[in-house]
Length: 248
Image (tube, rainbow, N blue to C red; front, side, top):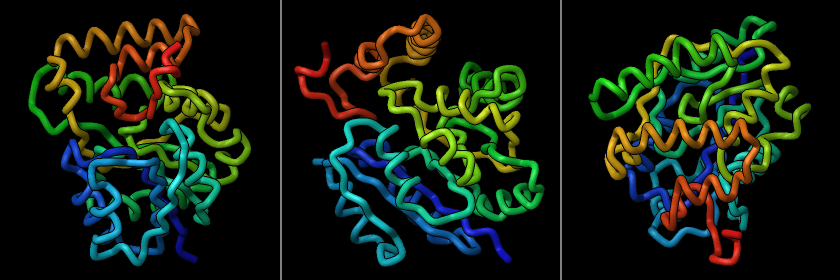
């Protein structure tokens, strides 16, 4: 019997990076048995229209929610999904055309519980190439961590046993990986995703890279995720919807 894969796509004002229409096209063309679950927090940029007017909209389970961060949207999607395996789809990342087939082939081995895809950016720069290399070949091996733009996938029983995605405004993917590591190291399929380097371009590649490292130190020092994410996002509200009163 073919493995049923649920794809959970969290959305909050996703027009800015230009990936959403291509993601929907890509998912519609993925072969095999699948379920597409889109979990959307209130958006003001036309995200809802792009989703509902897409040719494959009838095949999408769209959930409107008041969830304030991406972790909550992902957990809502996991709970609403039905697949044996759940793929957590980063909202500014493109999967390879045969992504779901690659997951099925990997998961034919019952000992494999979770994994992700190899990493690349949509901008060619030596530091971004190094970042992708490190994210693909070193971090998963030594710390068992994948970020969400690897499009993490896991068996349902594992996600249920850890209670979904940890409810954090930032580093929810790191905490998720740490929780899933009780089931073993992540396994990478051969395919490579392409993810947006928009944050690097907007802030400056070197400046953003330094900020990323600073935030990692803050995470391991167990500082407040809300304050860390405010430093990361500022007022852009990319992954989290903040009221001014929520900063403190």
